[in-house]
Length: 517
Image (tube, rainbow, N blue to C red):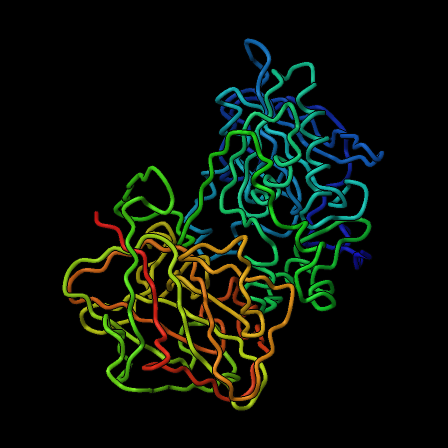
């Protein structure tokens, strides 16, 4: 398959913060600070800058390695593999987010790569940290690749190069968040012999199904922002936006960007946050021996008249509600045209896991429907709640009203999405309580015909006390907050006209996973 490429943003522009190609070795003394207010280094540190790492096809990557000068022997290496620029280069930084996401300047040395570990922290514990610019990024050669087998092979070669260095003990671990986590699935699946373990933090495992085209609906604003503003180099990059427009259905290109977890042999410590929260107060730690939790039961709630969710099927022969599907949305949690259904609990109820909505819907005005579902928590007074992900004092704010309404800082509730023409299920991937869709073919939606949609909602962990309510929202637009303020209102759908949601004879319902704690 021909992969579409486009020029990558050049490193010469100011916001790339390129500091040039300067292969060198420097010893930074304990107490050294990169900048005013930065965390000082705790130990004498060797900084090997812009070392060249050869790949099997002759391409050379560039990396910075930080390691403690005083060691009692060979040491392990933490490999930070990413596309944003090593050692503080690139556009992305915590300063982009209000309150630096609650992380003060003096907590970090400034030598870390974005979404990677701080070398100052790990060097003090006897680890080396290797920060590598992926193929095509900054001064690394070649065209940049967006995940998949090709990136995994580059990572394999890098792991093996690092593991053979004379000061290395042969143990290399992968570590990092988001893209830096996603890359780990593909590198680990190649099984490099020197790979000891991986630590992926919040890394998607299927580019198509989990982000770029979740539910069959292209979600391009964030990825366009990343493609055009977040990646820098000298050559080209894969143009995944052009690829999803040309190839909107699942094919070998998109399948290659799905992690092959069954091939991974290295031990993995995997972390994810259901709310994008970095801190909660008070902290709650409840371990389970398996996932879903072994005591999970699934409660069914039927959509009913009067905007109710009921534990028994609706007491009407048939009923429906509708909303205008093509109303513009700003993604700030106040958009119109959202159908709601609620259930008030009479005792404590704890949701842990993924929910599933089964909806019977039609559209008399268009031959397809993009449907979005969200679950919300409502307090005893009827107020729809939002979770503030970072303690206010760490953001330097006095009230919740001052917190920007972006996805990083506020969590509204678990979501699901499905384009009706993509409703066919993939039996290989589907579970009894989780519908995975095939996405390789179109299932027509005749005008006005009622179709059954099975929509999986991402996992959540939410506790409701007696008197609090669960609200289910259904709309023709995304109800999550935008990732960044400039992305508000940028998301568009293929919707036209009114969507009708049926209950009664059609038994539209919601399945929620509950756990007794």
